[in-house]
Image (cartoon, rainbow, N blue to C red; front, side, top):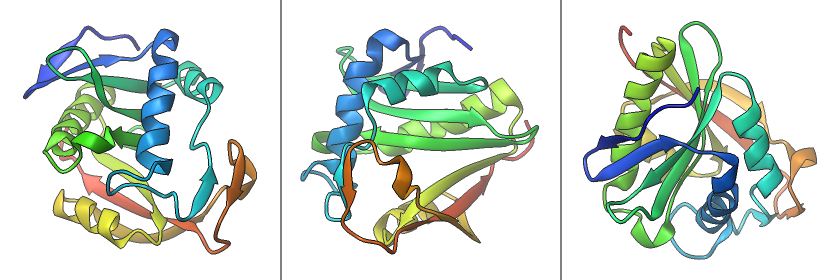
Amino acid sequence: MAAADTSYGSLRFRVATPDDATQIQALVQSAYRGRQGWTTEADMLADNRIDVEGVVGKMATPDTVVLFVADDTGALVACCELAKRSADLAYLGMFAVDPRRQAGGIGREVLAHVEAYCRRTWGARRLEIGVTWPRPELFEWYVRRGFRGTGEKRPFPYDELASGEALRDDLYFDIMEKDLGAA
């Protein structure tokens, strides 16, 4: 579903297009596999988090959007994947903030926009995420934003690594959920 540009705080949001896929892939790679920023998984995984074709594939998936988040200069500073999972449940994935700009409030602004988008667009009353274990600092960041652990654990998709390998064989996803209230 395409949407016009919208603003939230100092950020501008729009639904990404395939023309944005290369920029988005580079941002996701730097946030998840680079050595800068607090969200890196480089000590757990030695691969590309996603390739350009994977980003385009997410954009083409029904009931799924990739959001392009820009600062006031138009530069990409964050992105995420949103998917409608059921009548009242949305999923947040591939959430990345430029590592050079992390810890400055961008993630909080993006998350607030995501919640409003999911309520408005899909009528979602709940938002789900999967946090890779062991990432206690990330799990705690989401708890501070109103998410709770559900106790559900999902297997890590070792067979879907974009390229490269896992550096650990004990990874899994802790599933978290946030109540978004009435749509």
